[in-house]
Length: 490
Image 1 (cartoon, rainbow, N blue to C red):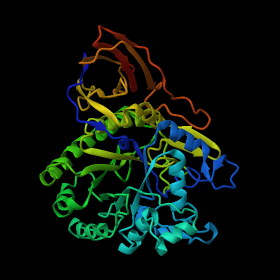
Image 2: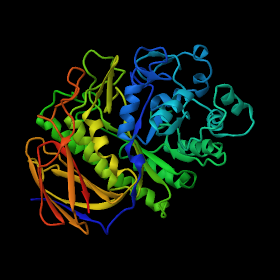
Image 3: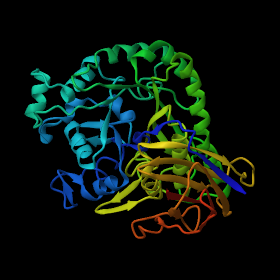
Image 4: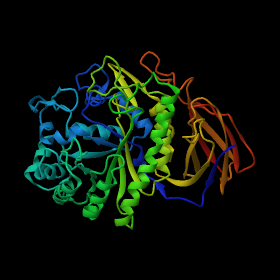
């Protein structure tokens, strides 16, 4: 019997809502057509922002959104994206598809989108091809209430009051597309840039340093040794790639072995988190610096017939399982992992939303985020999983996390096995249940997905296949490849 044991007396603290963040880059159809269609578009919009996408993200309770990249961030010059749209500088997006970027979606548009959704902005500054002054003035433009020339620019562009942006990334992937720097070089650049990113009262910056790719603990060590007192967060990037970077694998047409491999590789993120935290702890014994996983998710070969630089891929129940597993891992490390941003929000990689013209599809990954939303800013409850392995012995069949908020306990549990149902015994130490309700997400196969002709093939349903045994135990039956959420009230 698979067991999930909840211990209410054992907690890591609050699960930050920011673990449920998203990432939006000027890449493919993420921003243009996905978020922004312009005020004159026949697609319903408010100030150019797609109404259907905004409403879906509000329902999902998107807490924080990273922008403008990604690799694009380190060739983005923010002043090209302010002022009258017709006079903004045009450029070629050399990172992603070689298409023309007209900068019609810039700082004010991003802030308007965040306002409509109700999420916090996370801005990634340009270290790779920018200057210290450029980034310093971007902070001033957004946060200063003073009567400076830079602030007056913001007034002239229609916003007298400062925006008060808290989260600032100082460069992106500076070990790669952000400048091909060595850690020993970037740590000095980081210290220089952050020095001139000023706090404008009452706004205090949360400075995020570029951290490691995957398992590069050397990068983490150099950054922590040289700059841990000058940062609030250190980023980490990890993508789940079933194959290799030359042949990643297909998003829909995959084998059982590829399904299993994907989840084994997704589970590796916990090993990486522990390895980097162990390094961070040697320098930051009071745990002042948080780990920020601001790029994560699945990465497959692009869909046939699409621009290879647009990174458009479908999204199946396999991706939902990766999301459920990963979010449970983040919840269970909420004392040190303080923000995460799935890549990417719309039409790119493991997107929560797909669009095509005036049509919109919510992906299985979206539904996992929506089902997990009650964990946001809730008190984490330890969830000890004692379970069987999948047939090849490489993957635990069950993943779970739990939290409490407003008098209700939320338990998210998934059966990662792609072929076999699972019975799970939920034991609740210190929790007495008087009422239990549930929802479940599963499809008729591991590659079940939603498309524009069939947008509701995979959607949450009422879950009733459980039985309460006394006040502190529940027996669950979970179909293969499924994720369920239980709401338990005393």
